[in-house]
Image 1 (cartoon, helix red, strand yellow):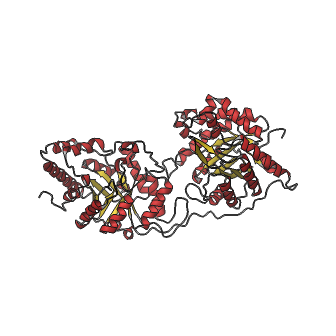
Image 2 (cartoon, helix red, strand yellow):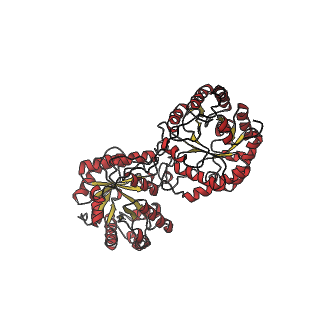
Image 3 (cartoon, helix red, strand yellow):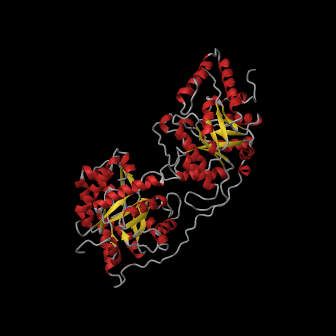
Length: 622
């Protein structure tokens, strides 16, 4: 072309070929993985330009700016949130010098790196502002079109498209990422996701990243029947392998080119590469695809793609099983009866005999359920789910399974909840969890895909027969779901706000941290009275002055008034200290009994006799 055409003109005339990876090439040039690749636009623009030049020499019709992570959230991790405009405009300037008048410059926009509500804390408004800020910088810099890529959330991609459309009518290519099962990260079928995206004002829709060419061909065959928009395909050069501490992509240029030919035959109009794809790959793709395009039937200006109207109905939800039918605990929650649970921590090893004996003791004393914590204070113990299953099998008492968001990704979490319901565990307490660095395993990595608020929303949908991908299933999950609450949180306004969000997300009861300050509990309950769900108060019987000091100083989210510490300090024997601790616990129960629906009493150091004594169900003074 003698002068630069726009994207739509190119698409009307022929197949459009894109570039390959930017991050892979920068890594090969010595940019460390823990560096900010987008900042290289400012620090070493010549390096970025060399990458662009390589793709242009290979025959690419467009190159993407080095701005995949150049939004305020991702840049903020490197202390560069204030540099959004400078980094994006610098990237456009670098690409423009390489592109000249014949090659198009695509402004690359990637995900924000934070989950949107309801799966995370990022609001749609915050996401819109971030995408708008980056898009403005790219468009003001002079890109020819915008490519929004590597999104696994349809909602986030739609937000990005909307942000661009508010400020410009520039052409947009919208690309989602997909797994080997032709699904998004959340389990949504890729054809349904692309059908939804196709309803927006975009020039093309498609797929990039995550999988290699073979898997992406399978996805292409699905999506071509649900859209009449041009389709883009930019796979990875296979999956990376670790070779001598380096990540290497194993697909050869010839292999990538063979699949590019198949993409062409299946109707793709934009073909390029993603992670691991080099200039050598693009050169071979250009050679093969350009040769195919030249022998197509004259006058066939574009590959026809069948247009199909896909009904985009919301997933079929089912009525939740009535709470009183889900569990005995659920029935008591609806009738207002007092609930008593005992907290027993799973063992460190595999021997459950002592734990089962303690659960049996609680059942015989009339407790309603056994609370089973999930890695409290980032400890490592036997699976709480296995513990819960064994307790219910052996003792017939119900359990309340604590479920921590710290250790699992969202897909694994959903699988666990489905499994728990299938195994007859019908009460769950969703908690975010303590960071690993608070425990004895500081080198462990916290996952935290979602927090307790977001996962409560996921559980609510599962109870209506809808999974995280929007797929319907039957029968729905049978669970009574609760959340934690901390009436003495250091940032109480934030805790109150989060509690209200938990209720809106679908929480059906709450269990508090151990209560030692009744006035603070009453203040908290008053503050959330318009969002009240049944509250079960945590009770911890002190066993010694040392134990009271530990609770006061080393357990996150617990406040012990000085007067209680002074009182525990008067004990002159172990038995005396234990008696004072039980007495304090009984006083707490008496003071707050009319304000809460029950008590979750901890068994300090596994001693359930102390817990039962605090409830007046056992006399251990003899």
